[in-house]
Image 1 (cartoon, one colour):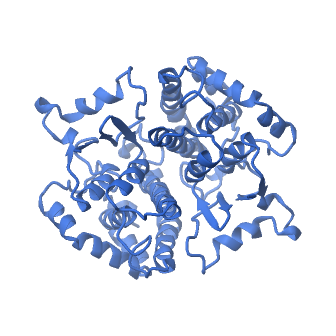
Image 2: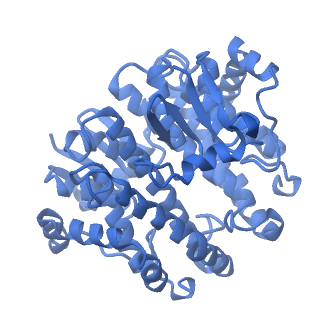
Image 3: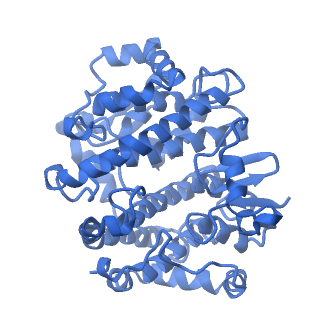
Length: 242
Length: 242
C-alpha cells in the first residue's frame, strides 16, 4: 500500500514527525500537497478533504494520512497507527501505550515551542506580538525547556534496555520525534538549547544516532526534507533566544 | 481491579475527563490525591510518583492512572486504554482510532481554552498577564471557539449512525469529554459560548443527554464532582468573555 500524507507545503511542521517514521521504515508514500497543483497537489489537495461536507470522519487540521480507505488525523494518532505497521513501536500493548504517552508529551512540548513566537494565538502575525513573545520565551527558556529536556533525558536513563533508545531496545517512532525536537530546538534557540542540552548527554547521542541512520541520512541528503524556516513551528528569532 | 487515579486536588482539570469515563461505566476507582494526607492522599501521593527516580516509565505530569502494575499518563492515552476496558469505545480498530483522533482534537482545544487566561505561560499569575489574556481571549472567542464547536457539530452531523453520539451508535468517552467541554465553556464564557452554541443544536443535545445519564447524575449529585473554579482550566473572568 502507498500511504498518502497531507500537510501544508513549505514547512516541516507536524508532518515531519510522520515523514521521519515513513522514511526510517522505507515505506512507500506520497507527500501529496508537495506535488504541483496541476498534478493534484498543493493546498487544494488539502482543502478538498478539509471542506468535503460528505466526509464521515473529517480531520480538524493537517497532517492527515490516507491509508487505504481510512483517513487518519492527529500526528500522535498517525504515529500510533504507523508504529505498529512499520515496526517502529514495541510489540506489547503496555509498551505501545508507553511509546504513545511519550509521543503525546512531545506533542505538548511542540505546542509550547510554537507558542513562544505566538503567545497571543495564530490569528496575529509574530510582528504583532513580539513583546509578548519575548516574555513567553523567557519563561520557556528558564523553566519549560529544561523541564521537558530533563524529563526526556530521565526517560532514556530509566530505560531498562539501556539508555540508547526511549522505549525498549530498538529504535521507535518516539526516538525519531525526539531527535527532530533536538534538531528543531538547535535551529530555533541555538544558545538556550546548547545550555539546556549540556545536562542531556543521552539526548545529544540519540539525536546523532537517528540522523546517522542510513535511511534518514539519505532522506536529508535527497533534498526532500524541507529546511527549517521562520514560517514553521521552530523559528529562529534571535531576540527570543535570550 | 480497582483503578487508582492521580490528579491535583481542588480542581477538575484534565482528570475530569477520566473521571467521567470511570463514573459512566461504574468502574471501581480511588481518586488517590483527594484522600486525606494521613491516609496516603493529597499532593504527596502525586509527588511520590513524579519524583521516584527508580520508576522505569515516569509520567511527565498528572493525571495518571494506575491499572494493576501499569502507570498510564496523558489524558487521551488513559481514555484510549479505558475506552476499551470499560466498553466506552467502538470495537473495531478504525473506530477506536477515530474516537482517539477526536479526543486529541479535544485535547488541543483544552490547551487553547487554558491559554486564554495564561497566554504567557503557567509560570506567571493571571494577574500578571491580564492585558495579554484579553487579547488572546478575543482571538479565541472570534475565531477558535466557533471553529472548534463548528467542527464537533459537523462530526455529530456526519455520524452515519445518527447525530446523537460522536462516534458510532453508542455513547463513548468522546461524548463524555465533549459534554464536559460544553459545560466548562458555559461556566467560563457564558456569553460567548451561548452565542457560539446557537449554531450547534446537536452539541447542546449531547451535553444534556450525557448529564442526564443516571450514573453521571448520581456522580454530580454525590458532591464528589468538584465545582468549576478559577484555579482550573475553565475560569470565569468576565473581562475575557467580551
